[in-house]
Amino acid sequence: MPLPKISEARELTDEKLVEEILAVKKQLFQLRLQNATRQLDKPHQFKHARHRLSQLMTVESERKRATVNES
Image 1 (cartoon, rainbow, N blue to C red):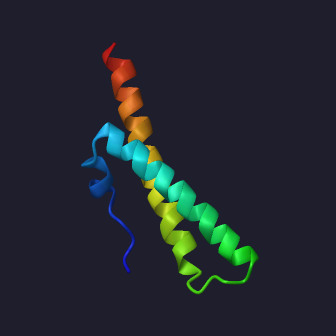
Image 2 (image 1 turned 135 degrees about the vertical axis):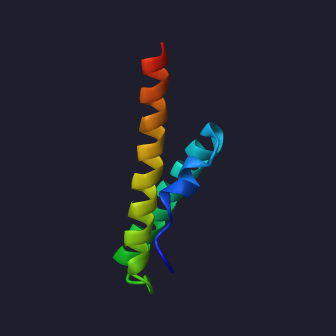
């Protein structure tokens, strides 16, 4: 499974972006829980989830900076 592209995150609407951030944070929590209980089968999912979260948060901060600069 390849890492997600940031262009996909940039295509999301603001509402969908916030929903996606929450979903990835929940996924990371579940992965940590599975890791603690030794039920985690695919440890590479941590890398993918953290990468996706950083992309989404980058896009969110870019949009916030753009709106502040326009004002």
